Structures are given as C-alpha cells and as structure tokens.
Image (cartoon, rainbow, N blue to C red; front, top):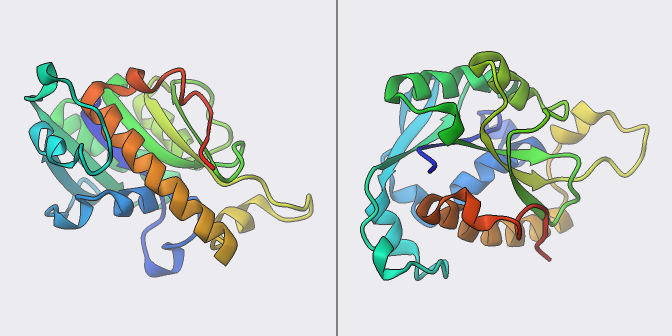
Length: 211
C-alpha cells in the first residue's frame, strides 16, 4: 500500500522542463493535480487525496476497479520536494515522519538514465544508480527499501556530453512529444498503483516499453 508519493525534481521555472524533472512532470500530468489544494509544507509543495476520490478518475484513465474495491480507505499524501534534487530526501523524510508513513509505503517518482526514453519501470528497493535524489532518500531513511517509479530519459547520445548537463537540459521538441505520450501511460499506472497497490503492476512494469 502506498501512503506517500514523492515526485522528484528541482523547483523553479528554469528547471521545469528538464529531463531531471521527469517526476515533477508526472505530478503535473495527473488528471486531478490542478484541482488539489497544494500548499508549502514539509520543505516542499504538499497535498493529499482521499482513496475514494481516485475512483472518480478510474474511468478516465481506464483503471479497472472491482466491486470489492469501491471504497478505499485512507489518505494518500503527495509531495513535490523543493529542496533541490540532492536534498529531496529531507523533504520526504519530513512528511513521512509527520504522517508516520513507513518507508516501505513510500513511492518515489524520478528520472532514470539507465532506461531509454519511452520506457518506464516500477521496482521495490535496489541500488541508487548514481541518482542524487535516491542517495538523499537513503541518507535520510538509512535504507533503500522504498518503491520507485522510474521514468526513462536515456543517456546522452555522445560520450563527451556531461551527465549533469544532460539531466539539467530540457527535452528537445521531439523528445517532449514522446515524453507526453509516456506521461499519459504513466498516469494510468500510477493511479493503478495507488488503487490496487504497486504489486499489481508487476511483472508487466518491471521494464515497460510504452511506445
């Protein structure tokens, strides 16, 4: 069961369309995001949604919900850390501590160099892959045992391109078009994970080519 979703990225207009902000872009793409009362809390932008409210969107995003699951208890916390990527775990830890959310019930949405653009994957735990946001998570929680929703951005096309410059650069127009289609599929998957549990996406989403 997921109780807290953290969408990683960097705050500020200059970073808004960066590859590194793939997680935050997914938050913006959720069909209910703009209607929620986001507010500054826990070193980030915070809001929440009741489980039952997600059922109102299941038809729109084609998420099947059985009769037994028509009443989903609990609150799901949504967080956009504003500490910048390398300290994003500070924000997630602040929210998780306040709401007493176990680390195993946290889902972190982030960009992933090791997956090509057009690919996404769910996993529980695992390595950090050099990702500063995941490093910050582990530094705060002293474990990597949380769920990850990895949105592929691919590696630079040429070996001489600096990784930091790559992730902090914007998607090209062609890439932006591809990524928009990725986000459409990923909103379906995220809502399914929140309604049915992230395990319901496995093994299909271990590594899923979306285009």
